[in-house]
Amino acid sequence: MKVDYHVHLEEGPYSLGWLNRTAEALRPFFCTAKQTHSREWLDAFFPQLAERLRNGAFSAEWLDLYRLRAKQVGLAAVGVVDHLYRFREYKAYYEAHLHLAGDQLGGLQRRWLEQVCVTSLDDFVTFVEGQKQRWAEDGIELKVGIELDYFPGGEAVLADVTGAYPWDYCIGSVHFLQGWGFDNPDTRERFQQTDLYMLYGRYFSLVEQAVSSRLFDVVAHPDSLKAFGYRPDEAALLSYYQRIARALKETGTATEINTGLLYRYPVREMCPSLRFLEILAQHGVAVTTSSDAHFPDQVGHHLDEARELLKRAGFRTIAVFDRRRREQVDLF
Image (cartoon, rainbow, N blue to C red; front, side, top):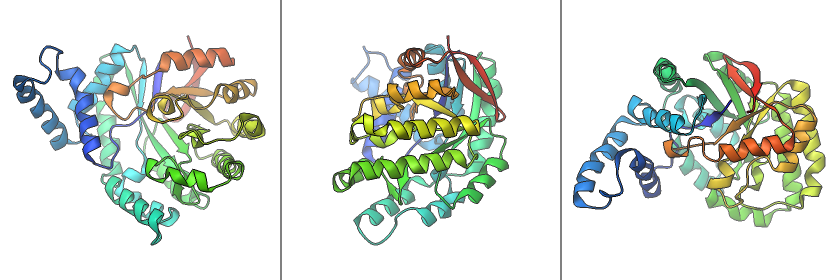
């Protein structure tokens, strides 16, 4: 069964780069090669972009592009999630845990939070739930999930989120270390100022705590600290891989193979690595498949390669979810 369980509808900040990338995502659905870059093409295409900006991400027209792409790549199910930091209701959660002091990092992250925390969780859930029948009529299961950033001490807030809506699954993730958003390209120089062995130790300890919290159905991209290519020799990380695998198995928590780092970050590698996947398979950990798409043209991106990598690592089934109940289905 081919599924993509980690798909986002929108992600700021809303820069000219974001505007250009949104336009690029629309092009395959509204343009032909013969028309491209003529005045006639621009007059036809610009209204489509303007409509996308006017209607926002929670529109049937925008989600339809995800559905069309899902059909093109042969997906049986797609899970739409969004980051908790997108929702105004939980801005205070991030203000309590991010580094937002008066220094350079704090100023950068405060601006970032203001730029991305712009929508409503109620609106998100209502919209995706309301589109499920439309997708079902096209033969594709649409699932609704949430991606929750784990911070020690924040468990009560996250428990409230997981219990408040009819989620199909809840994803836990680690994007911040001691308040630093390590996957933000504007802060990547901090890797050069820190001992990598110590940094990876802190990171995997936090991932293990997230798993042990038992709050999540899936813990996402479990070695994403490698996003910019900063990492020690993998042999030094194997004991951490074993710890994470044991915790996942003991708590009955799934993880994912996430292709996003392969096409969105300098490391150009899936997450987790093949060696990590082999250890997860040896422990009998459940895994699902994810593109981490942020635009419709990325849905299902590199999932065929991911599925082959899972098979090579020793997996024969993948996890799928419905109303937070997990089922194992054949990988192929």
